[in-house]
Amino acid sequence: GHGNPLNCASLTNPSSLLRHEYSWSPNTLWYQMIGGFNVNLEVKVFDWISREEGIREYIGSCYFSLQELLIGPFITPIINSERKRPGYKSSGGFYISKKCFSENPPSLYPANGYKIKIHVENYPRVGDNYDSPITSLKVFGRPTGLLGQDAVLYKHKLSHQTSWDMFVPFEGCGYGGCYDQLVWKYYDGKFMASLFELTLPDPTFYFMCKPTTKDGKVRKRKNSGRLVVDEIVPVCHHVDGYTLALRAH
Image 1 (cartoon, rainbow, N blue to C red):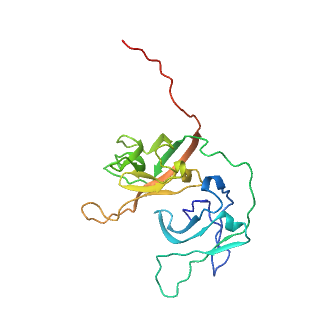
Image 2: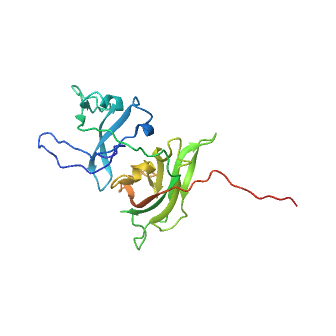
Image 3: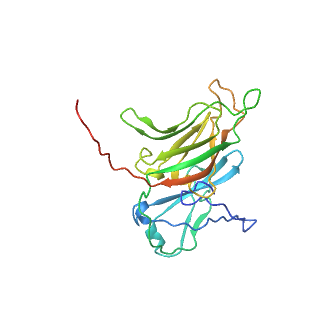
């Protein structure tokens, strides 16, 4: 599965030829970050159709709270509400095999942004020399203001560049800070991902394109490249205000 907000670790090998089972590496849920024991958490499960093309299929989702995990062994069906075929009940089950208490929770927002080094692979080759396209990388936060304009967190000038060093502040991402979904655009493709998702092991993000161009032609490529995170470091420098020395002439 890919896209699980709790963990995007690699899948294990199928344990059965008749019914495939997948598992993820252990992950810690801090109740201070999710709002409490009674808050419903959603787990979405996807299946890669083509990892090279960035095509995935939605399998289903389920919900649970931390309070439910205290009762006993937890298992719940994975439901895809979009499937309408007769006799459909579920797309499998979600099972939490082991749980334990953790201590020393991290403080909320120990940093005020991330310093990120990224590059794009498998981008379209254009021109006679098959160069990278002349375009820019843009990162947008939630719409702000009365006009609903996107908050521009990063925007690079037009160039052939395919790698960038940037600082993305939590302020402007939205109320959820590093957990809010951002829009990442490159050439004619885009995807949505939070800064937190970039910190997970081996994240995979494709700049997905619309199936047709503006003039109605069918695109040959389904994406305009894959984003690779080379390095992501929290920046803990925080400024509460400025001390100004003023004088009048």
